Structure formats: C-alpha cells, structure tokens
Image (cartoon, rainbow, N blue to C red; front, top):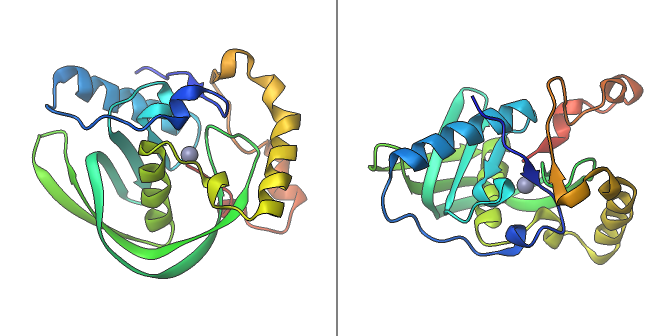
Length: 195
Ligand SMILES: [Zn+2]
C-alpha cells in the first residue's frame, strides 16, 4: 500500500493536459493501486493522475459499490442536468456548486487492457465528469460563476499555506472533513464530495 502526496492548486501539473496511455504495464497497474490507496486515505470518491503528479490519462473512481480504473476515458453519451456541491482533493476545504450532466456513459480501457463502458448517474456522473476534467487540466472552480469563484479563491487563500511545496501529505487519520463539521451543520456531510 502506498499513499502518494496529492498535488494542490497552484501545482502546474494540475493544469497540464494528460497523455493517452499507449500500453497497460505493471507500472501503470501499480500506479492505479497507489491511486486507490491515496483516494481512500483522503476519503475522496475520485482521483486523477495529475493529482498525484502524473501525466498519464488515467483516473480512479469509487462511488457506492462501483470502483473503476478509467484509462483513456471518453464520455460517449450524456443526459439531463444536475447541480452538485463539489470539492476536490487538490483544493481542500473549498466547495462550489457546479452544473453537469445528470447521467453520463464513459468508454475507457481497464487494467486488463480491454475497453469497457460505465454508466453513472448523480454522484458517479459528477465524479466521472470531474475526473475527466482533471485529465484536460481543468478544475471544478473553472465552472463557477465569477462571484463564486472569487469566494472559492478567498477560501483557498486561508488554506493554501497548509501545503508547503504545493503538496498535501496525508497522515493516518487525516480526512477531508474535520470531525466537528458534520455536527456543526445541518447539511449532510455527503453533499461535500471531494473528487
Ligand atoms: Zn478534483
């Protein structure tokens, strides 16, 4: 098990367009396993390669009982609209409402090198779109209105000094949600999903 450092906002790799994977190698399988470990340690529901400083076109998602590695993913169908309050493991403690497609179907290559399709709705759909954005160097804050983006940036100003070297090093017991948060608010913590 290897929990990798997570790159945070300001790290140039988060703005880089990733490179399609030519071949599924053992090294890539190890990276996928490490990305799962990292996502789970951070209590996220998705993680893309640039968030661990890599440029492979690959991400992992885990929502409910669906856990998947998506290599060279592309969305082949979308339906409806949904608004979700998103967070990002690379922008801790910053949240914003983003409108996305309510249902998406994605085609990707799996760790066995074979193509497959995955359909997601609600949080899984949001997660897939958020992670695919990462693969194109895009972040959820790019989807916010001018005012909401400014709010998000102000919130990040208060947070960013916690991440010297623009890296978020997870320690055992670390979570995205401070323990008091859910209790202090009526809003269900599940609405703050870090991706
Ligand atoms: Zn993210």
